[in-house]
Image 1 (cartoon, one colour):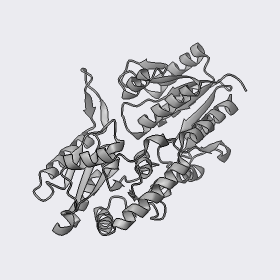
Image 2 (tube, one colour):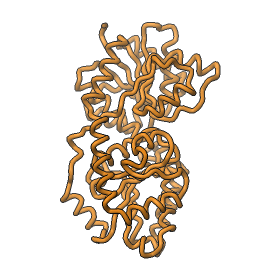
Image 3 (tube, rainbow, N blue to C red):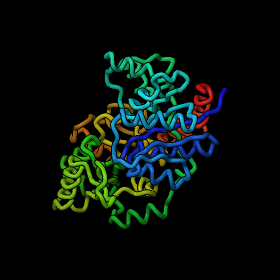
Image 4 (tube, rainbow, N blue to C red):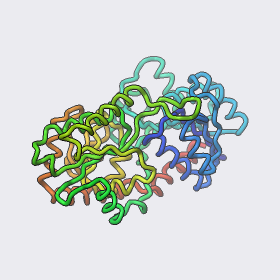
Length: 384
């Protein structure tokens, strides 16, 4: 086993589950003594957070670079810092790392796949995946899709579950009471909420539209909380975030719905919260209506807080929810399907508790950080 010197590449200006988890993983690896550097945009939240944590960042000044420009930059960094292993976290970075690996047979490349695996069997992708030495995912469902759709050997695939700080997922009774009081939740109401980017692909519109399917007596007993901010396309010259146009349009629509007389006391929009766990605690049921979520961290965190999950029957979500064991599966893009799930929990308080307890047990058993960290450090050692 040789010396491990890792360059992480995360070419993203957004701040969602992928970016948050990648930063946390990098910080955990640093605590484990891994020598590592991170290539990222100077304009990104990723750069800000990793600098605060004392991680070696190598921020490039441009907001975005092409995969070829990134590859050239990676090659220079590899030479300067004697990098032995590249770890890419987005598709663009996977491409750039593959290009940078050209004629460097000793340099290894790990790709963390956070997205879905659609079919890629052409000549270009066969070359691309020949430059990936290990592909890691938290989802067995996604890895099964990789086996069918990507030109990569099964021996290179690794199931490494997301790590979570299990100790921070505990009851917050005072915070729960305070938040429910702040948003005027009555004793006979349940709160169903989502924690996600305000983005069309996250099914936010369908969640809101599902309220229309409830009759007045049902709606009276429910609040829907939308917690999150729009997808960010970049930053202006003053450093202020610029929402992606579809996300901005969706946010405007949600705000219009909040003014609807029928929904006024039943639809709440809350900006993204750094300390988000008490907000999950304030919910009774968690919902994520993404059209095709890979393997959601917010779902995982809600489950750790013993919340049953309304999730879509797509991507890796069924793997998390199970066969309606730890929540309910609904059809992607179907507001009426979500309405039925709302109605089920309005009328089944016992299910909220029993499914929530099963969700907590499963998530803690499968997603503790020490296990995740050991798998990554073992993989690094094996490849060096």
